[in-house]
Length: 126
Image (cartoon, rainbow, N blue to C red; front, side, top):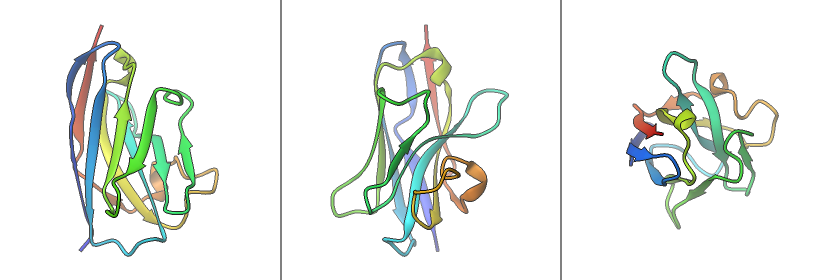
C-alpha cells in the first residue's frame, strides 16, 4: 500500500531555514513523479517543487533559488530544503506522488497526483 509521511515542519523567523522530509513506501519506482505542495491559510493547494528519477526537476517561480528538492541516496525518500523563508511561505506542506515522469507543464498541478501524505505545518514569522 502506498504511504507518504512528512516531517520537519515548524516555526521559524523570516530568513531562516527548514528541511522537510517525506518517507515513501509502496510505490513502484522509478516511474514516479514526486514532489512538495503547500496550502497557505485560506487558499488552495499549490505546487512547490517536483522531481523524478530521470533528473527532471521543476520549481514554482515563487520558490526557485530559495528551495531545493532532492531524494535521499538509495532511498525513495524525498526532502525539501527551504532557505530564506518568507512569511508568505507559511502553509501546510504536503508530499505527493503520481506514476509518470515530471516532464509536462501540468506537473505542478496538485490534481495530477494520486498519493498524498497528511502534511506538516510550516509557519514563518516576520
